[in-house]
Amino acid sequence: MPPELEEDAKYLFSTTFTDPQTIPYEGLSEAVSEAMRRQKGADLALYPPPQGHEALRELIAANLSEKRGVDTTPESIFLSSGAGGAVQTILDAFIDPGDVVLAEEFVYMGTLKQLVERGAHVVHVATDGQGMDTAALESILRSLASEGKRLKLIYSISVYQNPMGVTLSEERRERLIELSQEFGVPILENESYADFRIDGDPLPPAMIGMDGQDSVMYVSAYTKLLGCGLRLGYGVVPDEVQETLAKMSFGTSPSYLSSMAVYEFMRRHGDEHIEKVRASLKGKRDAMLRALGDHFPDGCRWSSPAGGMMLWVRLPDGADTWSVLGAALAADVKFNPGPQFRAGRDRPNYLRLTYSYNTPEEITEGVAILADLFRRKGFF
Image (cartoon, rainbow, N blue to C red; front, side):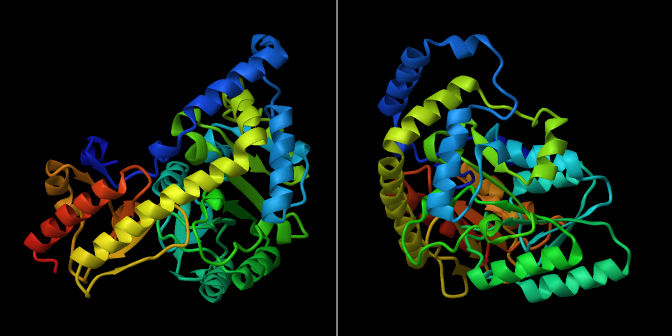
């Protein structure tokens, strides 16, 4: 990470932090107290089971069935230190140097870093408003297979993709699964933002629920919903993958106390809390869209996502968002230059803006400052 992105700023448009206006401080405190009273804290004296808190895994299985069309069991679920921890566990088990991993045109920087550290060859696939272009994916798969490349994984944040904000359509999900099965390349589906639907059409079902041949592994998390400090995520994997992960003790286990608290809170307040977060994020997203419309000219383009925590912005060709980052931080604005999301560190005229942390008023102020900096640089 560039040193500039380690600095703090008032207008934090660079990280998908939990919405601070919605963190359920009292509810989580009560949940911890209830868990300690009911279990008398005895479970804290022991190491947690390898796959994590059983009752929470049961709740996750029920929620996935109800909301994402996934028929699974607690035995197929393992808890992790955030969604990133679940991804790390799977990559540690299956990715070797030189393996090819196919992913969207821009890839979440945390996962991209994990892949590069393991020596994977990341191949970006063209992506539009319907998600990963499966026709382009098929062409790439056929070409790489003919060259004898080790095709190891297709990675997709299939709901409100980070950083682009797009959702993979149901038609493309079906085709992606067909291609996965045809070429024998499993899918790693990340739905960390599935709880953050703001408006628009209902989400298509998760690919893991559409797949009938164990072609899909799935990760998600409570981190963004309840508090980044909780670091609690989970993975859902087929039996043969579970056997491999068991040899690694399922990687990064979350705090058992965190698991107890999340279970108690979500079983009592989950739907109510998700609605509260949705309403808050709607106000923030709309504020950022208004600010972009007010301060960025016609030559710029940006996404208008139906959920999630970020907007994806394209400046005119020739703009270099890296070159403005220092001045932006000096003005108390922090954002992500587009090259952070590319294995080749190209496409400098793109940037990601997150809206989950600041208030609508702060978002309006920060976007105006950023637009002025780009204008002074001559980008529009």
